[in-house]
Amino acid sequence: MPTRVRRHRTGLSAAALTAVALGKLLAPAPAPAQAAGAGGHPGHDERLQRQLERLVAQEDGPPGAIAVLTRDGRTQVYTAGVGDLATGRRPDLDDHMRVASIAKAYSGAVALRLVDQGRLSLDDTIGERLPALPADWHAVTLRELLQHTSGLPDFSADPEFLRILQADPRHRFDPRTLLGFVADEPLLFRPGTLYEYSNSDNIAVALMAEAATGRRYEELVYRPLGLRETSLPLGYRLPRPFLHGYDVNPPAEPEDVSEAIGASGVWASGGIVSTPRELGAFIRGYGGPALLSEATRKEQLTFRPGDSSEPAGPGTNAAGLAIYQYSTRCGVLHGHTGNFPGYTQLAATTPDGTRSLTFSINTQTSKSNKPALLARLRTVEEDFACALLKDR
Image (cartoon, rainbow, N blue to C red; front, side, top):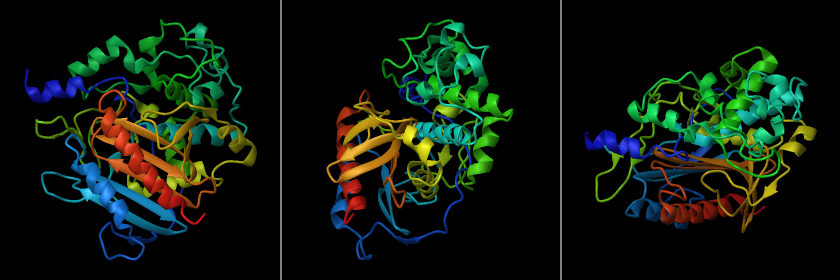
C-alpha cells in the first residue's frame, strides 16, 4: 500500500474525526481596518510575532499559522510560515479552512436560537423529538447533548464506521444516519452525571432541530445567521482560496491532507469550512450577548469546571452549552476549539462580544498525537489572549 494512503489512515483517530458542519451565520460587520503581521505596523506586537514564528519553527510544528485579534472594530492579523507549501503563499484572513469541532458551537447556535423562539426546550428529550432512536437513549435532554453529559456512545469511534472511512477516506455518508453506527449500544453512563466529549451529541442536536422545525439543518444554519464564506460541505473539496492543511511527521516531508478526507462523516459535530474573518464574526455573536436572549444565555454560560473541548483551550477550561470558558492569567474568554487532519483551531471572544481571537495552525495537534506541540500552542494562545484583553 502506498505510503501516502497509509498515512491518511493512521491519522483517523476518534479525536481527529471531529468534523463537518454548517453554513452561514451572523451577518458580518464591514471589514475592519487591518494591520498585517509584520514589523512597522501601528500596534503590532513584535513579541507576539516571534512567539508565532517559534511555534512554526518547531520540528513537528505547523507549516503556517494565522492569529487574528479584533478589538473594538480594529483587526490585527499575525501570520508566520506558509499557508501553501507548493507556492509559498502566506496564510490569509480570507482563506477557507476546516474549523473542525468549532462546528459544535454553530449547532449550539442553531439549537439555542430555537430555544429562544420556543420551538425547542433545553428539557426536550430524545424520546420526545427523535423517538426512532434507541429507547435506552430516550431520557437524554437537549441540555445534556449540548453539554456533553448525555452518555451517548461516540459513532466516530465505532469499528465499522472507521473501517468504511479507512477503506475510502472520501466516502460519502448520509449524515442523518450516522447515529445508526451505535444504535445497538447502551448509554455510557446515566445522563447528567459525567462529562464525555462525543461527536454523537451534536448529530442528535441537529436532528432535534430538524424535528422541531421540519426543515433541513443546513437551512437552519445558512439562512438565519448569514455569513457569506462559511459552508457545510459533504464532499472533500475546499472553496478557493484555502489554507492548506498538512500531516507533519518528521523526518518525512509534510503531506498535504487538505482534501484527503470527506466531510460527510461528521456533519454537525465538527467540520464547517469558514475563514478567519468570518470565524471571528461568528464567535463574537455566539459567545457574546448579540445572538441569544438573556435567559437562554444564562443557561448557555452555566459552566462545569475542568471540562474541555478537544483539544483544550488556553488557561483553565470549563464546559457550558456548546461553548467553553477559558480562564487565562489575564481574564476570561468564551469560545471553542477543534482539530481535524491538517488543522487545529481556536475561536474565542470576550463575554461582551466586542473583542475576539481566532488562532489557526495548518497541522493537527492533540493531547494524544502531539502533546508537546499542543502544550506550546496553548501557551502561545494564552499570550495572544492577554494581548486581546489588555487595557480592559
